[in-house]
Length: 154
Image (cartoon, rainbow, N blue to C red; front, side, top):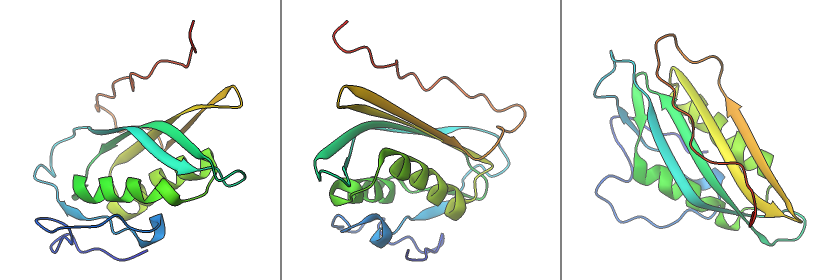
């Protein structure tokens, strides 16, 4: 993992290529423009891709990341590149989903963070993975993630 500096983002205004793997990805954080306000930020990645560690076949998920910022916010381009770095990364659904949530939480240090990984069926079984850093702060409006349970064709 490469250290970041919130006062010196690596990707803002720069041409950037997709990192080879999540460990090589740099997540940029910038100062929160509203550090004294309690609010929720949501990122949705409806086409997240990683590889099955057993078959090396692609796995697909719809990710929803909610967080209540504190001192910094994650820069969206660096988050997009970080999520894209999983494209050739072989890991189980649980490892990808929880690892993304933990890395964002540990680096950004928000007041609260949760991630929902809604994985498309493999072998006829959809797998949904959820992780959060703890109880949401009192007074934070936390909407439903809005992803319906997988129902197939029915």
